[in-house]
Length: 364
Image 1: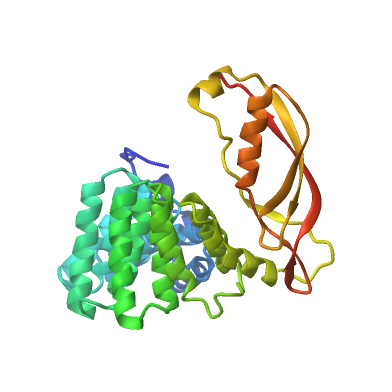
Image 2: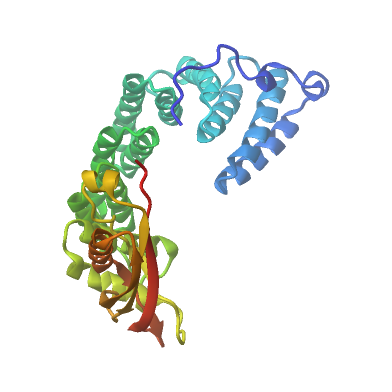
């Protein structure tokens, strides 16, 4: 979701003091809410984490002085939770935290690094991309001074900036940040590190979003190389990467290169007797623009087999309605289908006698 403006007022829940904050608020109460915040944030439960951050912030207004480092921390936590939820109102407590940190610790303090990243993310949410880049660059400069030019922290910050821009469909800018992160991780840990693989995967996602199937395949190949066993996916992320690589190889007209990934997915499936194949590549129907506007509606029903590498074999026309052009289009599309074959005792096996009906609707 792209947000182009920010509400002029701060969240009501932040401005209005609760009864507890006005009467008997204590540091212990604040610490209790912070404990809940840390636990929930660790689990990615940002809605609940935000609630505790708001309560801690409101209590802090009664317990701490307005310009104290303690209150700045509470403001940063509230702002961070709001930004994680895509709420641009987070920029208000974040700017408060930035101002206090700067006054208290100086403009070159390590304290500013994370709050600047969150402010940059909020700017991106509002579509203020130049301001976002400025905030990210300020954070990067501080990280270079504190941690070094090729530090893990700098790579992590680049990943965060890339995600912020990717979330607003700014894929080219996001790719630049992910590329910088990849270079740092590759230089520090080598091409087979999990961190390097994660950066490569994000680059592949940017390639996918911009229609660069060749780049997508190259980056996914780098990602697979970081797995403990590239031939046997062991978790959902690894299975997802193998599936996407199959799609990418088909998109660039190299279906044979996808075979090892098809077999890897089939071999990793639980041993089964008579399991169903899974369709992973389904090409668009082969029709030109004129056909789409003039062909009648109809259907084509076919039977076919799937071999142990997931290719469609022995396609046979059963019946159709709407004309031979529909048959030609359906058969051509079916030839490009790719399945993860069924497996028996961990080995991929072919399946015979499948049927499908491909329908055609004229959308005008």
